[in-house]
Amino acid sequence: MQESNPEERILIVAPVGQDAATMAALLNSHGFLTQICNGPADCARRIAENAGVLLLTEEVLKLPQVSDLVETLKAQPAWSELPVIILTSGGESRLASLMDLIASAAGTLTLLERPMRGTTLWRSVEVALRSRRRQYQVRDLIAARSKLAAIVEFSDDAIISKDINGIITSWNHGAEHLFGYTAGEAVGKSVTMLIPEERLDEEPEILERIRRGERIVHYETVRRRKDGTSLEISLTVSPLRNERGEIIGASKIARDITERKRAEEALRLAQAELHEHAAKLEKAVAERTADLRATNEQLETFVYSIAHDLRAPLRSMGGYAQLLIEDHAPSLEQNAQQMLKRINASCEFMDRLLMDLLAYGRAARAEIELGPVETQRAWETALFQCATQIEQSKAEVQTLRPLPIVRAHEGTLGQILANLLSNALKFVAPGVRPRIRFGGEADDLLIRLWVEDNGIGIPADQKERIFRVFERLHGPRYAGTGIGLSIVRKGVERMGGHVGLESTPGKGSRFWIELPKAA
Ligand code: ADP
Image (cartoon, rainbow, N blue to C red; front, side, top):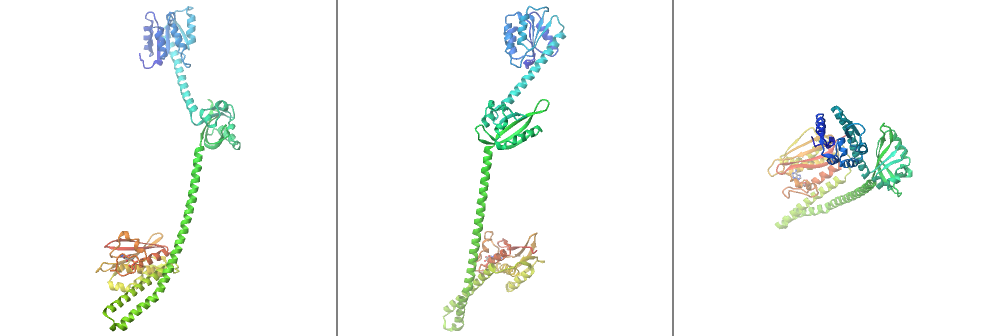
């Protein structure tokens, strides 16, 4: 016998002769699990462990311990009605009252009269076991239902059911907690007791949708607690159907979203504040930029007028120094002559400086009008301006044609290219013949013009610095005032472009400017 499944066991109690063994053998041969018990007390113990069918002979009823058996049968759980089969000796039994007792305690009592055919016995056992199996199904269903009921009951969410007219039919713990009404107070009332007046028209609408079989998911609304306070909730409402599939009501899960709504509102406010702050900041930056630009323009104007005004006295100082050298040289000591020459050279340098400053001032302030400009023409201006330098340095200048048309101011572009070309000719290592290439290329929006040299190059960390006024990297070996590239940048920016460079120290540089394409 398999001990593994007590639910299927046929317990046999037959104290006299070979009955028990014979019945067990017969039932085993038909595939039943059997267990022979040593009297009613042993049988009672085994029933407590569960059994499929109890099979006894009439003689058992005469034993004193039969009361144990009756008690055990009575003590079965509600779902359990253990089928009992008693083999009697026929006729009006003297033990009828005991049988009644067993019948009242057991579920079904079957009496089989001896002698009987083996088929009768195992068929009866089979029928009894089948009814027992249905009891097991009921038991499992009850267990599943009570589990589900427990889940519903103790869910944190409010789970409510209502009939098709909106009358509450069930109310869980979560509902009690959320709305403040006990199940006793809520069941039987209309759900409208939870709805604030101004939202009362929501309920007929929800019921209408439920009647159509619709499921309403995450319906966000406001409901009222027993104490009159409002709470924000998210509702999910599903139709409830009877066994025929007809809609008889709805189940409703309500979740408190007050906190979430509060957090959302706080987030919204924070975002609005942030936007306001960003807008203020942007305004402040724009104002400050405008202020800076105005100050810058004032400074440029100031520098321009100083440069302009300084030139006259400077020229007179230089002129007098020159006069002294020319007219009074014989009466002056060698030393004094040298000093006068130095004064004169300094005056010349200072004049160059002032002229450059004036050029910068013009680049910054002059009215310029933008239009299509042939790069070729601006480049020719640059070549013309640098002709002496080219000749003296025996430079090789290559122009890559065709050159594009750009949107620019021709004079400014010519000045810019002249400054770049002049630097390319100037900043070469001693004894090196300058080799310069000029070209241009276009993409969809911009034109890039570049001047490439084989000069001394510029370290990467100085690339920004050299575009500032008076910044020079290469000391007295190379003449200059440090303003040329400032003029380049100012001019390019005023034409709506950018300037930059690529360079390898010791090998050469490529300065580029980017300008908008001509329309
Ligand atoms: P300047 O030529 O009068 O010195 P710029 O403003 O034109 O002034 O140039 C600033 C500095 O940038 C130069 O003194 C030089 O050190 C560096 N520079 C400019 N162009 C080149 C170049 N093509 N190759 C190497 N260095 C350069």
